Length: 99
Image (cartoon, rainbow, N blue to C red; front, side, top):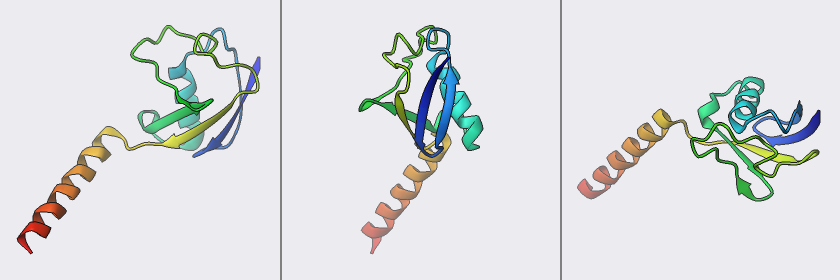
């Protein structure tokens, strides 16, 4: 079992098997512990945003994550939140044109 250290929206340590866990499994675990939606969690390790690119077969080891890696978890906007934010910005632009 490898230990991964987390900071950001949730801070702590998760023990995982790097050869068996996928990025989706890791994101779901962080979401569960932080109380957020897994789609709104972004994970960053070694300066790179971790993306599964729709391929849920890559393990954490294949993504280059090693034991004792430090991972930053941040909260990105959920898809439905992003749409509402864009709609509010559009309304604000229209109102500023009217003024």
